[in-house]
Structure formats: structure tokens, C-alpha cells
Image 1 (cartoon, rainbow, N blue to C red):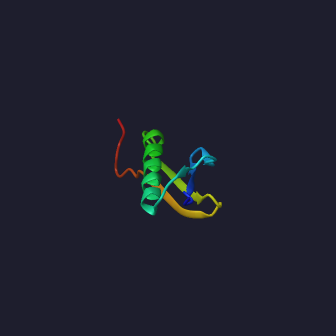
Image 2 (cartoon, rainbow, N blue to C red):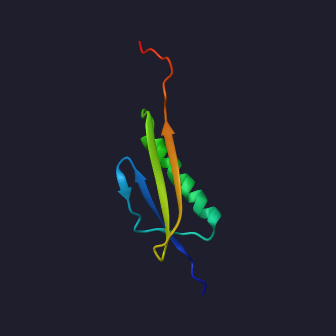
Image 3 (cartoon, rainbow, N blue to C red):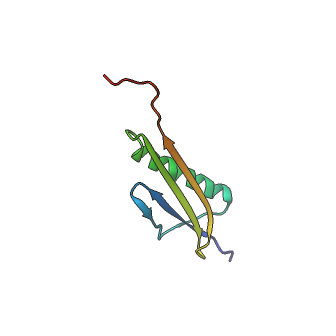
Length: 85
């Protein structure tokens, strides 16, 4: 029987690092990228509205504990000549 690799998605955001202890079985780099992108967008949707800046990162580990990729999303607003009423 073929080994099905499990990947763990550790999240680093404004709340600090959160370690994934469960992971999910994925079979390709494309699936890892899809899951990483989905996580980043879900977290951004929850945390960034109303914020002027933020940074979210996902570190992906394989089932041997090796980091296989790191994906990061940065958000920053700069106001230019805007007077608030």
C-alpha cells in the first residue's frame, strides 16, 4: 500500500503562531498550494476587515516534520492627502 503523505499547516498571524497537530492528507504540490491559499484567504477575510495592516503566514510541514513551503500574505493601507470628517 502506498504511503499517503500528511501535511501540517502552521499559521502565524496577529495572534501569534498556531501549530497544526492534525494535518491533512494531500497528494500533490498543487493541492498543498490550494489548501495554503484557501487558509490565507479565510484568515484574511476574518481578521483584516477594518485593519490598516496585517500579515499572515502559513508554514507547511510534512509528516516527518520538514518544512516544505512557506506562504505569506501582507496587507497595508497608506492614506494620501485624506482628511477625515
